[in-house]
Image (cartoon, rainbow, N blue to C red):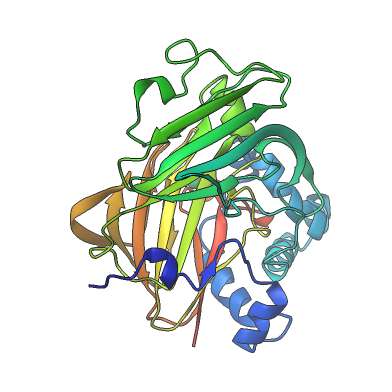
Length: 369
Ligand SMILES: [Cu+2]
């Protein structure tokens, strides 16, 4: 047990993703990424979704476009040597990972202090967001980021969040999981009027309970949350003595409608790999802002599940595939004791792979020796 504050132990945050070149350099495997290709291609041997299954899933099309871009059209495959063409498309997708895209969501938002009140400003606005390379899609965002900026406070803090609505429809913000005074709960016509276009609303409350929470729209939410009005609201406990000391603290926000199957606002191959050195422990905070359940599976390692919805598990338990249902947050610790590039993906296969290759909720955990 340690009295370190969690923030002291985070040596690299999701806000500083490493470039593909850096990762490859560290791994010493050159620009062709053979190790990643081998490991991830093994995953590709799982039964792929048929094109009929893929097109039946409405979310799939946006995320699959990358494969069409980086590989020859499927029509070519139909002309002959279809399996070779399929392999080539799978390989091209893997070799482009992690693909560069414009825009990084979930960047830590530093508060302005007003006395002892932490003040944050969130502006709801539309931007074009590059979910997969070369395919910007309209997104409705907080501060132009998808996910919205990470808000990280300590249990007992007083926070003030000023929300400005620059959308052309009303909105409201709900702080999902935080036990707050009713009038700050962010549900239009129950606890407040909607924030109309051009207006602002100020939320102010003391944060009583620690945990991995979220903030998101609670107005026309099927549309607004799907389009990107969502973010992480992390509350560190006052007493950190029971927290596992970790070297990295990763947030994984899942979504599954307007922009395809996404992981922190990006679809494979534009997802940002998680990295750790051999022997390090990392924390992963899964959050589901979508409409579907996503069984998140990590190859080669296991999760120690330590909290659900911010509440510590009475007895931490181990698994390698964890269902994350809409609205849920699960905190897990991974002891990175097995080196390599480990595929890390949703195991509803039509959320992760098609005959064109991997897409959507696919990423990697890279454990460096
Ligand atoms: Cu899924």
